[in-house]
Structure formats: structure tokens, C-alpha cells
Image (cartoon, rainbow, N blue to C red):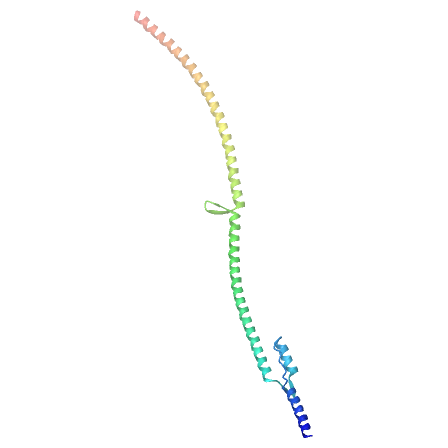
Length: 196
């Protein structure tokens, strides 16, 4: 009977030790929050406390530190990306400002014309050119009119001169004939006086 009891006690002890030797495995997948929830729900209770296996705490600590390290790396990467994007934004803003200045300059140049080194707006330039052309056309008509008047006066003067020359020629011929007659008479008188 002793053997029976001994056998029974040893089976009982092996069974209890087998059950007590069964360790629960800690899940280390999922979010840190899920791991904490698992740790709290699966840990043993002692009075108002929770008894947590040391390897679970070590594994959780390692996972939390890894998550913190990944978060720090992610933050550093994001900060680096933000800095690079800020630099890119500044470059783009500078480029935009330069482009706007260039566009404004080109617009001003497009809306103005350089005349003798002076920038004039197109509307003022058009007004100036049309005024100059108008003045030149009016001057042309004025000079054409004056030329025609002068030409008329010149033609009349030539005709008058021709008439005066003809009158003068006629008068000269008459005067020459008269002078010849008078000279002839004088010569005749002189000849008469010599004979007498």
C-alpha cells in the first residue's frame, strides 16, 4: 500500500509540477498598447497587485524601447524632411519672387518702347508718333500750298517781267529811233551850218 500511496503522491506531484512548469508565452506582436493590455489581463493576481513575469517585463521594455527608438528615428527623419522641404519652399519662393520680378520687367518692357534711351509707354509713344506724323502732314500741305502760291506769284512775275521787257524793248526801239532821228536832225543842222 505504501507503494501505491507513494506512486499516487508522485503522480500528483509530477502533475502539479507539470502544470506549474507550463509558462505562458508573452505576445510581442502588435502595438505597445495591445502588449500592455495582454500583460495586464494575463498576469497573475496577488491581493490588489498584479504579478508579472520578469521575462514579460523585459520583453515589454525591449519592445517599448524599440518603439521609442523607431519613433525617434521617424521624428528625426520627418524633421530632416521638414527642413529639406522648408529649404525647397524657400528656394521656390525666391525663384517665384525672381520670376515675378522678371515677369513685371518683361511686362513693363512689353508695354513700353525705348526711344533715344528713354522708356516711353506704348500709348504715349503712339500719341507722340501720330502727333509728329500729323504735324508733318499739316506742314507738307502748308508748304505745298505756299509753293503753289509762290509758283503762281513767280509765274505772274515772269509774265509781268516779260511784258515789261517787251514794253522796255518797244520803248528802247522807239527811243533809239527818236535818238537817231534827233541825231540825224542834229547832223543835218550841223551839216547845214557848215555849208553856210
